[in-house]
Length: 558
Image (tube, rainbow, N blue to C red; front, side, top):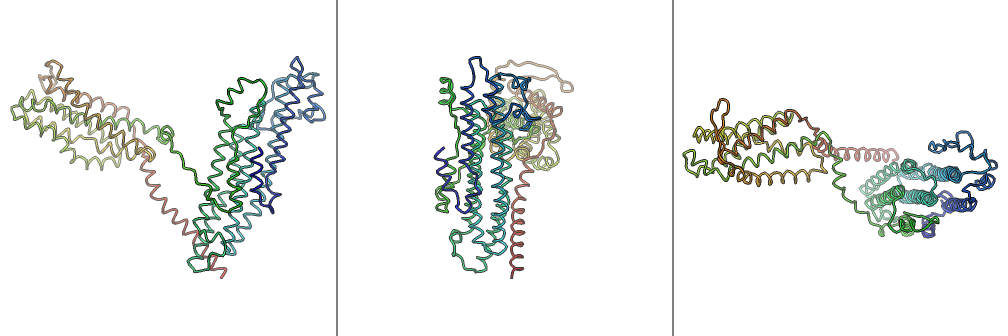
């Protein structure tokens, strides 16, 4: 890629030129693979076989045995040889597929060895020379020069990492074109991570913090600033530029991952299906990233590059943060919220008729409806304290109160007692699980799902309030009938008592679910909150430790 090479030259610092990855050499080596594959295609006879002598000459080996030293097919990521490939190679003719397989193994071994040799040499220079120089500048309290050296060192590291990844992408594109043996996903992933470790980027971050603190101390001591360009930008500029170097590496990491998966574009897919000759697949490239580094090398400024805006996580990704054991408790709590709100409003259409049937003024229906929310406030303190220890017991207790309260509300009709009706509504209010539901949603859901959980909670509330009167209208269409209950005698199911019996049955089912299936959830949301509260203290303590170490160093030097 001519554009990549052109921008790469702008990134190279002259005095370090021997220590960069030789992109041109590696690219030429990769081109030799293209030529070798073309020759192999021409060497295939009409019978689909390749002459042994032609194949040996093509591979560059002196003899056919050189292609199969002991353990050769296991030397690169435990590659397994096809059954009988040794016998086929030792014959006069070679099956094309087996010849291609052997050639692919050789190519991968050659390329991986060569590129790892280059990147290892570059990493050694980076660690032993460049980082050591920065460390010496810090120890001599020359923080301005150390800051400049750090940025140049980061540019050197990023240039080589981007070049290294560009070569990986080109090699995998070659393998995609010629059905070769690509560097596997695991190999590429490990290589990318090894590059980060090889260049000790965390150590560079640590040096950046020490330089920033050193500049801060010099500024506070009234030392003269602005003698160099880096000082005029200030400490924030140093941290920002280091952050942008890291952002560039993150972008290239994503592109390598995308190229590694072998994603097809629609245009390339159509071309592949319509042509029989191999296509020079290039796929992803890192030309834009190397161009950004080249511009920085010329201007020593990142004004042309803005930090990418991070994409928000998808809902499916956020769901992964939710512990599997917490799913059922959350569903049960949302269900309890729905049932309680439906319980509150299901009596609204028939409460006036019920009050008259019990021999009272229909204005008393307002007390019947409002009694539950009123008494719910008094029980909220108990549930709030109780849920500090567990959720199952308070939820069962609340469900039991709901069962008793709704049963008393319905049975008041047979006893013609408004007192029993109001007591039933009061007990229903005492069994309100709203505080338990809110506490569970807050303690169990991670921060990434907190907004979603609140929306679901509000949705369940609204649906319950809407379903209550609707269910009451459905019950009103049922003809009245009489039945017996143990200890309570004859009872009546009609539009006035039906809501009480209906909700009583629902709460019995709910209590059975809690009793037999509910397990205490893991309070991941609460644990995450505690971690967030302690993080600022940890950061302050680390900063104070670094500041103390720098101050002690200055005192020793003085």
